[in-house]
Amino acid sequence: MFDRTREDIAAIRSKDPAARSALDVCLSYPGFHAVRLHRVANSLWRHGWRRSARWVSHLSRFLTGIEIHPAAYIGRRVFIDHGMGIVIGETAEVHDDCTIYQGVTLGGTSLERGAKRHPTLERGVIVSAGAKVLGSFTVGEGARIGSNSVVLKAVPPGATAVGIPARIITAETREQREATAQKIGFSAYGLSADIDDPLVQAIHKLLDHSAELDARLNRICAALERQGIDCATLRGPGVDAAAIDRLLDAD
Image 1: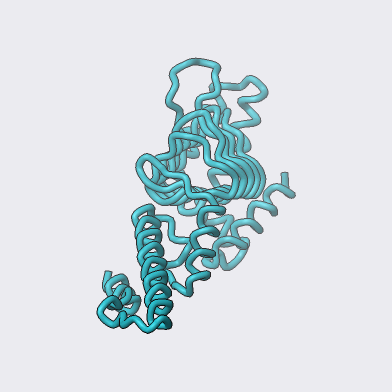
Image 2: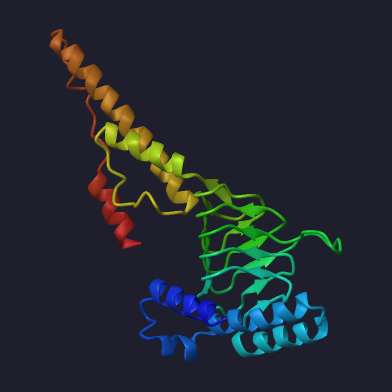
């Protein structure tokens, strides 16, 4: 038990720079309190003390604002940051090293008793504030759920799910887009490739395509000019990356 407690404290301190000491974590982190009380409630549940387990769970919800069903599985070094408004359902599984922020729901969409109704978060998943993960599917190892997303289907390992309903953005998709941009000497106009907003991802693709067309036109003009054909009127202004940067910074 003490080893688990030390692990939980160390995990919080490694992920939250505001955690200045182990004592701070023990005294003022509701996520830490909720996980510790869940360990008690889960043990009572597994030993058949169902009513007592529900009472401990209810007490934890009253004290921390975090509701975890006593039957839910919570792995090691799970970090619940801030925590207010989190709901983790009966058949949910949260495996080792996951991070969950405030307002998250790991909910079910089925009313069938005894069935697996809630999601499984594999190792290292990050679920951002306000996200709703609903259903009996798996969120793969190392995946990320964007803030306020509503996830209704499985998420592959290492992918990112964003939007309502959530769209899946795989690491491979991000790498391909970045490689294409680098190949034509095109930057993403100050937008990080890791930004998860699907609208931003769409803008990335449109800008990349526009820049690629611009580069092709320049190559065609250069080839024609080498043949003695004047292409001055064909060359138009290129994409103004600096102007787009300024617009984005203004927002």
